[in-house]
Length: 89
Image (cartoon, rainbow, N blue to C red):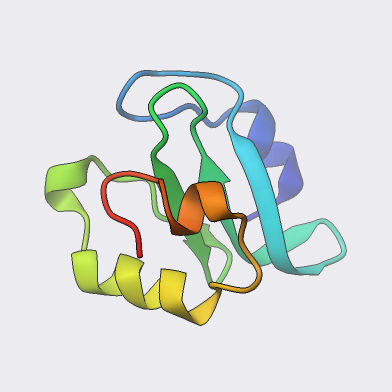
């Protein structure tokens, strides 16, 4: 995901802007792995292989999200790992 996209992304649930960005891996201006967090509704959205996965709760893949949280448990803040919606560790 190009960092310039941050100016366009809103939470799909409550349309909050801006989203908080947590970079795990990046190359130049491209975020390879990371997470977005809506501070209004506390939902996180993973960035996997440069793609932000910003789906409503009912369309999200719980296993993919939980695996992502486990993989990056040490790299992401506790407000994502322990408190974020729609699920957390």
